[in-house]
Image (cartoon, rainbow, N blue to C red):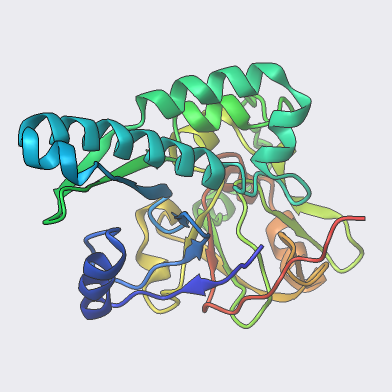
Length: 294
């Protein structure tokens, strides 16, 4: 699988829309994973693909309207086939793609087929040769997340804060976390993991509320280090930590320092933001091929 990121600027975005027929309509830079027939925009948390419907010149000459209708049908079929192919490559956990999960669980296969069928067409282009291009989009959150997130992500109870803690400590509690992973060969996933230097989990599925993970994602991906602190997701007092390395190059597990981890664990109030999935991962477009599975 060819795997890489593209950082899309406003001007280039317009060109990309013309050349490939897929666009996101925003001038900001984005983290995008490109595949043969579609792409996953991790910043916008959407999957977009295109399908082309070809009609015979003979039919086009006889009945333009019938040819156009046939082209739309063919284009939609191609688009949904491309969407299925692309979405199966979606990295769900550090070790599993959606394709892996579909092979092991029939209920996911059936649910996915329903979601794909309902994925909206957001643009249709009629080309001069009579062919039709249809563009389809699906969000990563909501119904798709509810279907594919593992059972270990549950509806967590509220974290109880000890009455012995000083009010000033609670007021200073971190409201979110920014992980600076620039320069690391990291593969975005629906459920990444953060571990300390001894490989003890700091943030993972067992820390997050399913409600929050379904509603707005387990984490957010961006390349905007300067403005990351202003993200509404993070609240008014986020902590910034540095990703030291990736556990395995091209994987979805980031190692952070024990010093940073101790800051997070020093106050139970700090852990509330993990439950609410108030985590932002900053990437810079560094990429690499994931290691092959043995």
